Structures are given as C-alpha cells and as structure tokens.
Length: 286
Image (tube, rainbow, N blue to C red; front, side):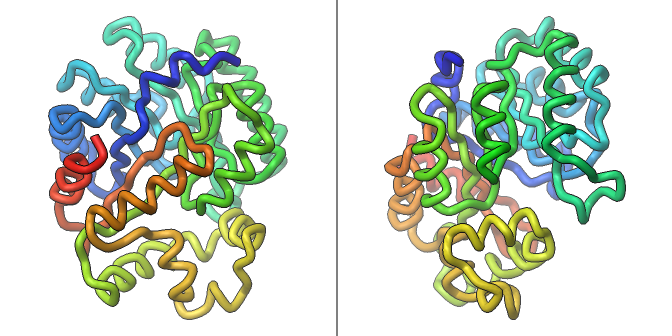
C-alpha cells in the first residue's frame, strides 16, 4: 500500500491524553498547529466516540493540522457509525483526518474475544463504509496485528513501545508501511521527579494490561521489571526524560530504528498543562 499520504504526517506529532477533556485538547491542538506540529493525536481509550465530535471540533478550530484518533476502540464504537462520521467530517474539512482504530485490551472490555478476527471484521466494515485504507491506521503490537496493519491500513500506531519494537516492525513490514509509535516524555524534570511521574503513568493501568506486559517481555523485560510500579530500567526506557536535547536524542532513536513519525505525549506532574513541554520540544524538533 502506498504511504504517500502518510508523508503529510511529518516526523513529529503531538499526542494528547483524553484525561484533559475535549475543550482543553481543542485549545492544545490550536496551539500545536501554530507551533508547527503537523498532527494532533487524540487518545480515547475505550470511550464511545463514534460521532467523531471532538475531531470535528478541532478541525473547525484549526486550518492545516491533521487530526488522528488514537484510538477508536472497536468494541465500543460501531464501525458503520464511525464510517458515516468519517464521511461527514471529511466532506466538510477535506483530507485532514487519520482514523486510528484498535481492539483495545481484554481487561477493559468484558466482550473482548477473538481479537484478530474482530480487527479483520471491523476493517471489512470500514471498507464497506467508504473509509479508504490509506486514511486509517491500526494500533498493533504483536507480529500478526502488525502484518494486518500493513495489509489493510496505512500502517501502525503502536503505543508505549521501545525502539527495538520499531526496528523489528520495520524489518518485518519492509518499506512503504507507515510506523508511527507514540512516545511518552517528561521534559526538563530532574531524574527522581521524572521517574515519579513516569512510574505513576506506566504502573496504572499499563502494567495491569497483559497486551502490554506480554509485549514488554518480547524485548527482554521480566516480571521483576513489573514489580513496585516498574523498575527504573523499564520506566526510563518507556518514558524519556531530561532536557529537550536529551528527549530529542531518545526520539531520534525511534526514527533511526525505522519509524516514519512519532506522536509525542508530554507528561506533567498532577495533570498540569503539557503545552510548555510541547513548546520546548518544538524549538528543537520542528
């Protein structure tokens, strides 16, 4: 599948956590556009967002930025309704939407079963609903899901992964498939403070989700790394921290491993406004 449209994503995007709420994230996206970020990624978790209302809200408030969903959960969002919303939004705002979809996690949905078959069926229904394959991206961690992403979408948007995951995904999928990992960062904090923020983020819920812990094991982490909220090694690898130059160097490790694009999620203590971190990173990355 051609990844030509994927070049519009650029190398660096801004990833916004759903905990901030739709109005705050709209304001963040407006500023992100002025800073030069070409993509605003919107985390949704298992929320019901099939109307894509916040996507349309952000598109209306901006003029150029691509809005990417990260992700629309397949269990809680009907594919036909999502496709109809996609057609509505793109008819009004053009080619500025990347529909990120994914199957989520068994701990988050009691109906979770046959994840691979569910993904295939959902993509079939998006096809029937008129969502072009190269305008959607699949959340994928394991090899089978990664191959499905390559075959049926623009590529993959893996969350909370290390550069080795990117390297192996690129080796498996070859060129022409967009690999766009999320990368969590803490900008400017000293080591202990950054680890405190990172550990609180990683330990709950991600160390309680088997899809993530199984994926971490693929890259050499063990049960000992999951104890006590996460070992220093695990936290440091998953949540880049330090000066803007240090964080930028860590981001470049993903790019050197084969990523086309990185969605940066800036963490702060106590849910404070993350935009100062995005401003600092924009100065060195964009």
